[in-house]
Image 1: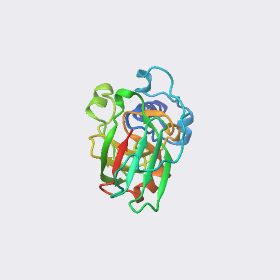
Image 2: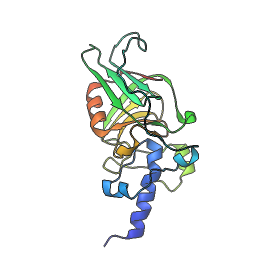
Image 3: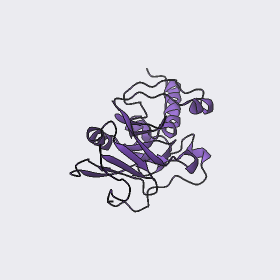
Length: 201
């Protein structure tokens, strides 16, 4: 027989982790019993809003001097991720989750430095200070906040990753990372290379 208090404790942890990594990894049935708030969301004034900004195709030229190794543009305002392949034969546009607040948002140029299928997750030192009860490590799998795939950026602790909680996409819902639906990050994972240019605006 399953201990209900341990179930609730586990769910409470997973809700808190959602704000930490931009995604919540829990079964659909458990998601339905949870509210949309997270530990970090409670610190942000106002409610978490759905994406109401324009969601449209863009040209790469205003943002990149070339497409060497391909290019990823993340538009924080429209909550959209754009990808162009090096030979310009592929263009993809994905809805994404973005950081909860401006102080958690980083803009500028970086690049993909590592690709991991089935990523593990560790809270940052700042997350552990706020939430000492969180585990030091979450292995790959359905409870991992990074979803099925992750692109690690040259900025420490920043990633473009999947999420098992589809409610996060199109919202301000992360501590800095960019989240995609698992099927979208799997596709982007196959397209992006080590060295793919990344620009957050």
